[in-house]
Amino acid sequence: MQQTIEAFLETWMEEFGRAVEMFTGSQPALSQNRISMLPASEPGSLLWRKQAFGGRADFVTWTGAAEAAWKDLGSADPDNAQGTYFEILNQAQMRAATVASRGLDQPISCGESAAMAEADFDATQFAIYRLAIDGGRIPDLFIAIELAAASVFEARAEAAGGLELIEQRHEGEPAPLVTERLFDLELPVAISLGYAEVPVKAIPAMTPGAVIELNKETGEDVELLVHGRVVARGEITLVKGN
Image (cartoon, rainbow, N blue to C red):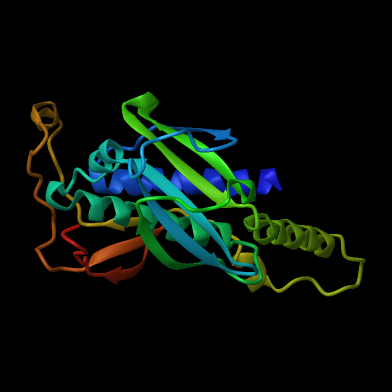
């Protein structure tokens, strides 16, 4: 049970780090350790975000952050730091659900979320972790994952075992469809805004804020590349100024 929950936590941390990098421009260093209960704190000192997940079974997570932590993480928009922090959490939750759904017959989906001044969950029914960010430069966060989540992630292990049995089929039995195998492939995806040729002698003079002119005009489509090959084109959309 603990291994499946910790695997989900590792996925969540990776996606949280990517979301923070997307909003702040720098990827945080994250570490975690499991704790038996939340440390004593003043009422309302932590801002909690309750997130419901649905799938083979329903479960919830709670993420708690001190004001200094969520303000630092939401600093890309000082006028709406809390909203930006919540958007970072939303991105991490949705991506973690997507990644954790691989191999499951019923995908995990994000349900309703709510901000609360106090966490009211029963600690005996949750695995609780302290998340250290950048070695303590940002105050610790706390995440609690309901133990019921284990039954969802264990289904993934069962599915993996089923696939192994298929591989060990007897001679003469039909092979799995090629498309089923393709669905499990992971490919590098990149978004290309455009291209530019820059003289090598100009690179050392570049500083933060330097402008590089690309070969596309504002409003033109960006390219979606898989393994360096263009497979689709689309447009950039602003969401809450990002």
